[in-house]
Length: 612
Image 1 (cartoon, rainbow, N blue to C red):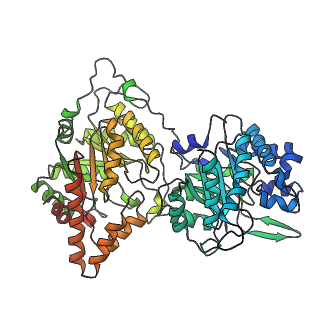
Image 2: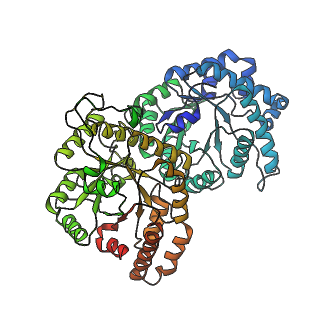
């Protein structure tokens, strides 16, 4: 295996580029469709390796073996079923030779080309056996992950995934293909297959081939609402056109690259090309992606390795703010999240904050462009709240909209204005909001920004240059106890703590047992955890959170309770939503060091009901 494995690329939280089509390149070199492309691994190994090398030069970080049809069922039509393992092993070794130590090699597995039960005579276990032979050959050749692609039947891709899982613990990218109606050939929509693949343990979920970039973009926008797993997007270069006696894909590299950027903004982390794409397409994708990929890799400098300059002393947590003092002494903290106004009048927001202060709430949480919506900036909003109302704000600060220099300037200026409490988040992509043409920056992610603020607290800028007096930020981070890939979430949380996080706020909690299990696993980090509480306003509000807000997990029993009262009117639904929130508050209070209650749609009175 290479030093750059699929597991490593999954864990770094960044966007990565796959290669393009193998078949298109071979077709262009005169090997037409009556040739078994998989057999060329044995007959034309130099040619196959050269194609891989072209994609590596173009900037691909992951290359796929030339084995899309190298299963015994498809190979049998060429009389090659007995060579299944041999062909796959040769293909993996060719890709490995081209990849060197800089690129990850994925074992490509495509569908069998036959229908399996209940739609055809091939049983699920027979399908599993066919796929297992291919997987074994690829493992022998040295792949460091798998990509199961262009499947239409969930049962069939499940058989392929089971074959991978039965043979190894390497990660697997799973991709379905869709038609012009946005559904698979079997009528499955992206939300359904995303949730099912996540349940089966797929490491990455996505769409490939299909009807071109626009169709795959739409699929990504739907998948992102259904799963927290990393998402892949690998479209064709449009639909093929018959030109003379050949089929040609007409989507230009620039067109494909512009869509790759939009796919990333919509939530994709792995992008590449399928039929019709070439190294030129991948090179252009790589160039475009640079505009939305965090350009500063997250290099976590452990807090223990940060040394303050001579004559400078970091300020203890208890002396930085009232919020910090409460956290430092173990006092239970309360806060309410309100959103800044959409316009220029801060009066309603300030009145809400006065009500919170009068009720004895310790702090007000102010989000930063939540759901990629256009609102008054978090920093001026928080400064107004602190100056006009006298309640401490905890600012949410996201990495989406500013480059590294802009973030540094913001944070220094906000500190000079008297703000002290910060909750650092990566941020929602602009595509989630009403401004799809807006671009994201994501110069660094929440781990990198946590590292930056911790350095400022020790009198150092990002380049380790002294800044004079240290800042006094109380540093918080977000965390999701309900993440589908909990191991990855815990890994990122560990990095955040190591980077300097001093407290954490969870996504809204609707499943207490889920939170308890999470707290058991993060107990080792010894930092305060504040539980998010969201009082539901209605069944629609509950369903929206469950289905359309990434990272929020609403159990079926909570949805059932809201359905039960929904026919009795708005007041009954609101009362039930507040009752659920109170139950969450009561049950989590002994396990966490505080709660952050959301004020849905600015209804502070609803949030205050939760505290009663």
